[in-house]
Length: 299
Image 1 (cartoon, rainbow, N blue to C red):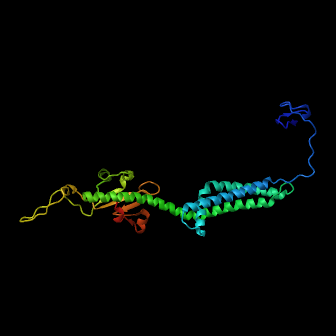
Image 2 (image 1 turned 120 degrees about the vertical axis):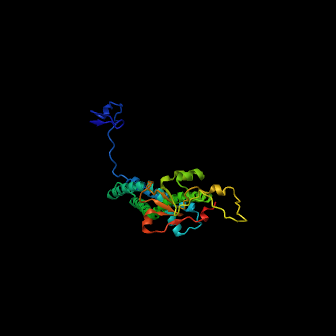
Image 3 (image 1 turned 180 degrees about the horizontal axis):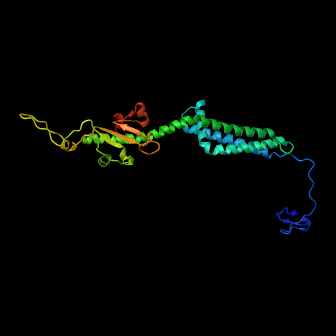
């Protein structure tokens, strides 16, 4: 069986007679191997280049993060914070690439060390492999030490979203109370009478709102005038009598917001009660909620 070196066709016969596929034929005997062969530096070059690229990419990303921070300081901790930012930016690309580079680099380095007569550049190969491994380990450490802070920031972001809805609802509720001297009897009444330009109120679950009152005030009859009164009070606003709600006057309310699972009625809900909001789990522990100050409602 003869394999043509030009086209790879397999046939029976001598190559000097010509390939039956492409017609190529041998013009002489194969050249003998040289007495001395120079070792190859290709594998060491691959390791050196991969290590250099890993260091350059990480350093460039760190410098970019430092410039974007724009703190005006170049101290040690500023560089550490920038390196942490660079590690998180490179995590989805660097971690799998570094794993493959280190695994493949170890195989190349081992082959260079075991066959010094065929491959050279052992020192450069070792330097490149160490650089790649160091960058991979440094990225893993920087990501690991910042995981707790990232988790706290994630929780803060979730709470900020809840608080944004709470502030919008609280402001609308206080506007309703100021205008109608009572909290709304149901959530639909709040939507109909208070503007909702960004749709935040409409996005909340109306089943979470429950008004209540310590004493039900009946306002269907006007107060009787005292006899013999020479001077009587006159209303300076024509809307004062019309703004008084007929029937019950609600003085308290409870508004429930869904937690992380976006489902109302679970253990991770938030409870807003009379200007104070807190997690449902903290209510059972007797925790202190967060209140809405009057200054926060000023436009």
